[in-house]
Image (cartoon, rainbow, N blue to C red; front, side, top):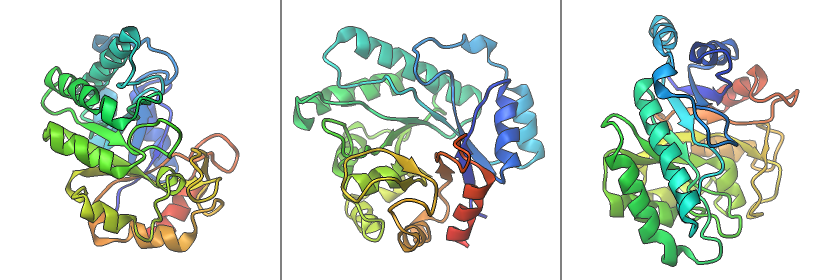
Length: 274
């Protein structure tokens, strides 16, 4: 059985996220632990998980991922921003553990022109600190970026370096198809590069998104599946590689009505993997 999921709202309670995902045909999901655009987070002691846990058991629901907020920059030279980033990521790791999640998906940020070599040791140290101060069953997943100027981990070799350098069972990564396309990775050959870098065993989640922009554009704009520039054959090739068959697939698309992931996109994804 393939795990097919979507990013859904948890407004009204965590169990509502499961209900929304199930309603559009999903058996796994991704959510935010709070607003993705503000630092403030609810006291973890006030986060109720019992209804969500019961619903997941009753419906044999699969993995739940947490997406980190968009303000994070683990390469920031600003001590205040770095401290805020560390604090919210430690919160998300504790949140992941509390909800029985499968990992937090993180955009690491930007080197702001300093270059990867100048910031990588600091980024690695930050991730080590987050993992060291988190529950043992929480997982930190690095997401590949879309090739925008300065963004960390558009180059999959940077993800490979961090995973090897940190060497923790609590560290993995998430592959986004739109970001890969925008950064110059064809889905026809991306699997070969992942093999070359030894990254398959660390890949825990795949974001399946089409792209509004051309190949190697450096622009991160998701499109509905089949309506963008990636191409059906490319999706089918990558998503049916033997290494991908057991990895949860999560869509983060605009939706046909502009209100986010919907049943129509879920059906398209299911068609890609049948």
